[in-house]
Image 1 (cartoon, rainbow, N blue to C red):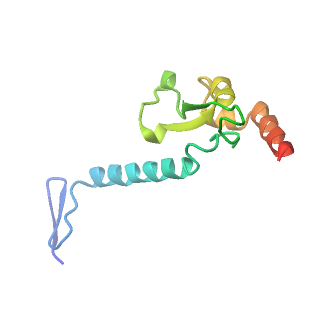
Image 2 (cartoon, helix red, strand yellow):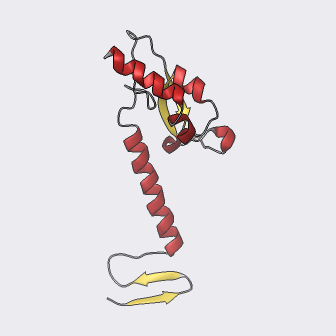
Length: 118
């Protein structure tokens, strides 16, 4: 396999041609983010992403869309940054970072209440 470099472009003789390494790394990172969003939304439409409460008309729990990275902190309107959350979690999280909200005492108590009901 012949490989040579020309001005920041890697050319490979064969079926695969890699462009610039930076572009390739950006594509890999984009795929990882998309995989993470898919895993995050595995229960999309049925359970709250944060407290795992079941959505439904019978339960009276409203489904809302939450930005994992708040828009006020630079988050964008892309699927990888959006999850379904119950209204209580969405309002409580507001513009708090996701890691801080997940570690909060309020969410731990809410998850405990959910476990007691089941």
